[in-house]
Length: 347
Image (cartoon, rainbow, N blue to C red):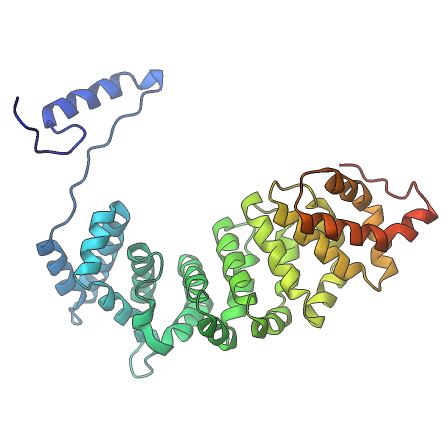
């Protein structure tokens, strides 16, 4: 028997075309056409792309090569590995850093495409260290002045950078960073992906104590509460966690207390999302804003919090969620005792 050297699932081109024709003929029966596989790039192609990208005299060629790098990175892992190995990343970083160079006129389109290609090629941030101390300015600049796609990519860049504590502190102190993320979160109706990225990045920033007060001052708590009204379930837990962190500051706590939607939104998310952390965070925030405010306590009871808290205690929720539920029940007991029929809102 002859050994098969080609590792493709369908190595024979004629056989593949016959199968594709059969798929097309049976499309009415729910059969999808199998795609024609793409071959990975080779070193010669990468060298040509690097040459075009380094050609400062031809902007059109440079832009075309950046877009090609992004597309190839998206196609397959082999392409990304080869381009990283052949040091294509520093050329993309160079385009990004041009935004921080006062002596060079900024080319926003090139920088935006370069960031998209960088994140596609190195999604875990392998190339960030090449940007030195100027990455914070670059991220903030794109958040403030870039297209919506560039702003979303800048938010992703910030989320990656926040893995390092020192970087997180630096980002929070860079003008425009937090304001740009708050603006992303406010795009709930038009750009759901922007909201997701904004919440992730803002939560990562707020893990550092030094960033919470600036975030509260920039309106982050209000933006998160409003986003929680109509948000993807996968983002609820992180958004609530960010609000809880902001409530550790006096300004953030007052912002949540004053917001008309805060209590009904927080009560709604108790025992609603499958993740225990969402219930934990929502209950913890209610404990914080109800403490010392009888008006908010009454509002929470009217919103139906008792029913949900009792369900938490009877469920398999985490120990922290049950502990916070007991604390809140004790805090609200005197309100409910005045009129046991107060808790009128059902699940």
